[in-house]
Image (cartoon, rainbow, N blue to C red; front, side, top):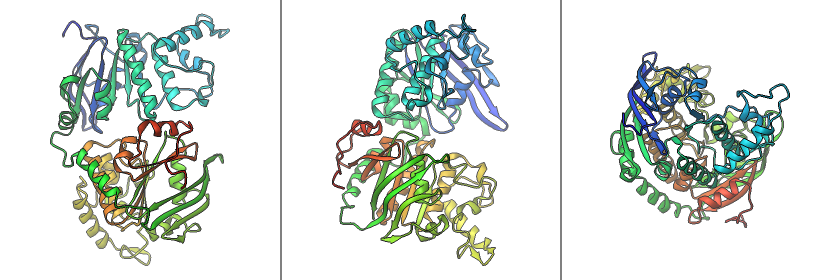
Length: 520
């Protein structure tokens, strides 16, 4: 071990039943560096860090912290070694104040009276030193996700960590908040801390990391200084081969095809004053009006939890809503979900496991969900399984679904393959309008490129697409127009040629912005 390594993980192995999640992984992290941990879906990034943080136990291998062997059996032991972790899902109590959340689980000398004046001063000093602005007296549940993330980081710093693990920390942040986070991380490493930055986003890992380690299929395949890493080299390390689609070519093609969808193209989908409530009856979507034209991809941008789910489910009549939904001019507002599917709307939901499939049903059955009561799949009360299996075999081949055949259970598929199933189901029905919610979340690069190709093919054949995504780069890559949603309302719109991450970020934060389509 090099004397300067703060952390060494060597020969780490971990299996879940017959599946090897980690196979001899090695990772070295130095003091005062941001170390990017990059890999596709299922590469083993989070599993490796859960072992380091004591949430899992490795089957084999060793961990050295500060040159000494470490046996981390719980998060408490990890924190005693100076290791902290900020998870994708924050471990917080929304009804507590910020300061109460930060000190939760620590020993307080004045516990009976819960006098938090001393911790409050320490927290304010940490927040100022590391550029983490928040009100420590505020109720946590009232704060936006970007601020709540700062609280999680401050919680780790309050405990005196020297190594901070951030698991996909930019997922729910605006571009401005990402910049602020990166600035805070640089202050931390200048103070001697080390940061492990888990991500699958190439641009971000190249922007902030000092060194980068790539995992693929549970193995560490490359470690390189930032100066020696390129997007191309990282992609090759992540997928093991050249990706079929060059992203710059795809972007150019998207720009070219965007010009084909002029304002004179017919409107396929029109939403008029659409409103809906959340399960508790509170407004989740208010007065939403927009159009999607033939051969057009229109994006919906926003920080998670601002009404995207309500919008998708309102369009598809999955939840009660007010307002009108029109397809090719026809008013479909009174139709149920099953009837909307029959008319040419197709929906790929955000949660592919809970809302997108029947996990215990066969692949063949999942590929016809929504159309199973219509010919040629149904004759009266009976399903025509020979027809269904013939279609399933064709779609498995066309969409390159890795499964043993039509009888395979959907629940046995990987996330990328299940996403291919949902796209195959939607596109095989000749959908006029395709509605997708975070279609590439959690997918590896090869699967993401496949999804993009299918959307462009749908566009070329005159289909209309409503793409709801929290990945602003994805929206900029594919869309003709982007509408920004904030607290259930439209905050503004942007046209291709006017796309700007910071303009979108201002709208996503609820700040007044110049609407590129105010007249619309």
